[in-house]
Length: 71
Image (cartoon, rainbow, N blue to C red; front, side, top):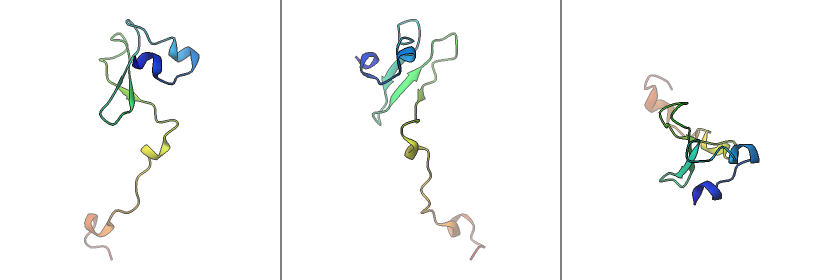
């Protein structure tokens, strides 16, 4: 049961209930938090607080491909 196995602090864990927030695992294995309908239309959110690498951009892009006139 993902709702019982997802890491969350006490106050947030208590928000997980059938008429409140729910959680699911996406294809990447990340836990998605889905708000209740009265907050929005069930758009999932992923907490990246402990995974900043998911927000960082790899700096190995070829700048010349983006800007052929540079160089």
